[in-house]
Length: 301
Ligand code: GDP
Ligand code: MG
Image 1 (spheres, rainbow, N blue to C red):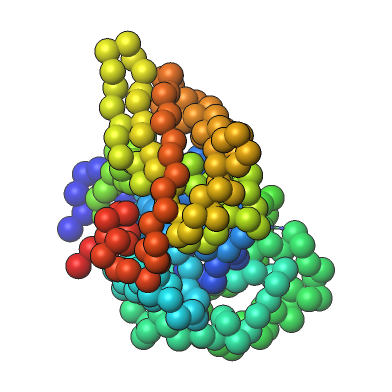
Image 2 (cartoon, protein in one colour):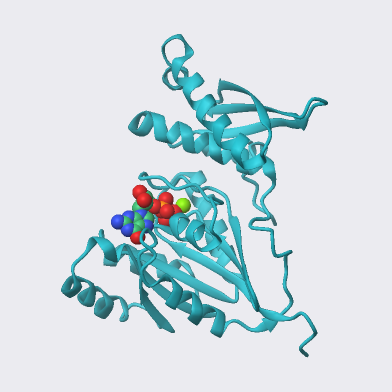
């Protein structure tokens, strides 16, 4: 039954190995920064939903943390989140990296998604970085590893091919309700967004020195009388030595991270922000599921 107000709508999971460009694509599609991007893999830990609304269509995108074969419990946990996200969707958008193709890894990632429950589109990303013949070769090989319903060569960076892909996604989705208000671009709580911005700045400033095992917990976030948003955030690292690196000489690094994050948060929330940023050592949290839960990486069972 089609009701008044119904549009083409549905949930699309964005899946693929770390670093193939999932977050970049999501941000382009939604037209704003909802998912952090980084030249280093694995900076997306939670499911981030980006909502794209257009006249007659609404797509709810789920950005997965990436599928990888690794042993730590954190990674196992993240794979769990990815696979689950795939199961609930109307469509799966599987992304590969044309610049750094790795057929074995793609085969593994596809196999992790389990049996085919919905349409699967393949987006071969970063075509701005490869030559035509190379791309054609990749299309031929990749089309053999799964039953893709459509294959789109795209560049999330330049936007090439993205509109064509989007048109096909919208065409394929069912007619249904608009799930979210048009102006909403994400359903993630503010707290999570704030933590991601801080993590992004720390990754940007510290590059190689920033341990993967870093998490940010946002402990308070409230408006005071004079219109200032007060945020208390803690960057968790695993070792004393890492704490020293994140804080820096005379706390210079921590100040830099804090002021970059504050600037972006002030723009986003259109208000003055007071950011109290601290660093704490929390040993072995990556292998301790209980502390994962404490930090907000809870599996929603
Ligand atoms: P994710 O881990 O899959 O979410 O990947 P990200 O979106 O964080 O991107 C990983 C890296 O690839 C970043 O340095 C991006 O700037 C880069 N990247 C993403 N899309 C493209 C693209 O279309 N072309 C090129 N050349 N680089 C891209
Ligand atoms: Mg990402």
